Image (cartoon, rainbow, N blue to C red):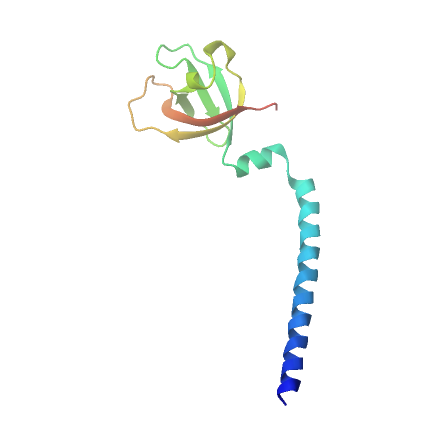
Length: 123
């Protein structure tokens, strides 16, 4: 009786192991095919927490540059942009991570933010 139970338990264990390993292989195939098609540079950057932005020169004394982020219709004053770029080399199209600041604005046209990470973008 014990041998019969032991054989049955071993048989069930072997079947469940084979079933799990074959379903994992099939799942891995499906995800790799979809990631090749769906992973675009824009999607990857957004998944990493970046926002699409544009930097424009500003004629104000307090704000030399204004950052416009695509997701929001708000003008941002990147106070530490010089830490990332020299003032004459500022790219126009960027991927940016920023943090809002609780400090008085340097100019009336934009609210201050601190750049956490920034990369140039091509589109």
